[in-house]
Image (cartoon, rainbow, N blue to C red; front, side, top):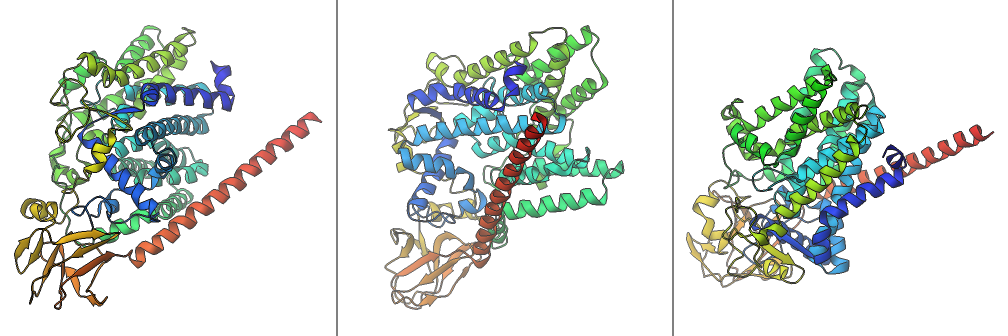
Length: 585
């Protein structure tokens, strides 16, 4: 096996083959298994597609998903930039579900290769790096996705879609910063910055956990007097590059956060972790194969008297991280008021035990391979089989009533999406044709990003697109024409109009003659307008100057980074040719 993975192109083919095999049933059938949360993500992607078709490459508000959705600031809080490849595939194939499956394959391949590359960069140990990457990605594919945050399966489900993508690339960020802080190798600072910006543009909750992990590393290094001025300068450069590479999301996000009094998510629960009885249950039913591997390999190392200090530290750290995330031993109630709105569920930080456990599995397997020669291929093929099985348990096996609908599904089998079933908790068998049912009834989680009190008191206003004249609300007064929003049939002598739109910076209102009207944020957090006897008002959205500047910074940063990368690559190729020429002489 080592000879196979020595060659970069064979290694790439192996990673690509694994990625394709995982999603092959869905790719062949042009089908995906989705549920309620998945509809939100597909609706977002469809809105992004419509935006791009009208020349809007940097989306802001929702415009094309119905009158009740117009003006919703979803894209400011939930970035879309990393879905551009998916939208590109969708536009050229006109096959929504197939495009999503192909994109998922690319995401898993990218994660496999990236995780391998960073550990190989740090250790120069190709087998260890290969096993680590395989273990980290494939142990995420075991068991029932609904009871355990299994990134690779939940990507297929499109459940917490972006958070799970961020989890898959988390090792690259953590290990890149570890290399800078503890190993005195600052060569990974660009990689750390790139992947940190990708994570930030995928999931704020997961990125928050990554940031806190890096802060803990910095504090530890400071206490141990291993954080010198050159490292601090490099970390500051990382911070600045991350800001630049994610500026098109980060700056408008912060600007709009300050523009209104935003509420926490309405479905925001208290922070919670699984009980340890649940953890043990998932070990015994193979829902958590990583813990099974840690236990089995620890036993083998002890039996063969190969259980070193490094192994012990990793195992204890793994157990401690599970206790931290999934038990009541850590007093989450102290941080609940501060973190619950951003984190919601503690398993968004599952990358911590996943990294520690995967590192242990890789090191233990290499050590045991000196005694058991076939343990490496057995491990890799077993993980691949179990991962495929994990995917199928959550999909094909539903037809055969294998599991017990722990998702609280209304049925224990797959159902096609219809107007009657689309709002239930059923698992849907969605293909390139019947996905239109979802697209025609876009679900954009309209209650999630609202000003304080709007979800509790004024939900009917934005859900029904009701316009309020002098404290009385009326239906059928709003319409959308192209990319603009209209309020019509305004009664005479109306002094103030409250639009069914949560206020954001960038909105402006005009009368029939094109005269700009005064608009402002009212006490309820909505956009209000002084009509000045206008009968029809047009509301438009224009990107703020800060937003426009952030797009320029974002574009230039990625272009310059790409140019630097090409030059760096060409220099590396030239250097290798020079070395080869000299050695041949």
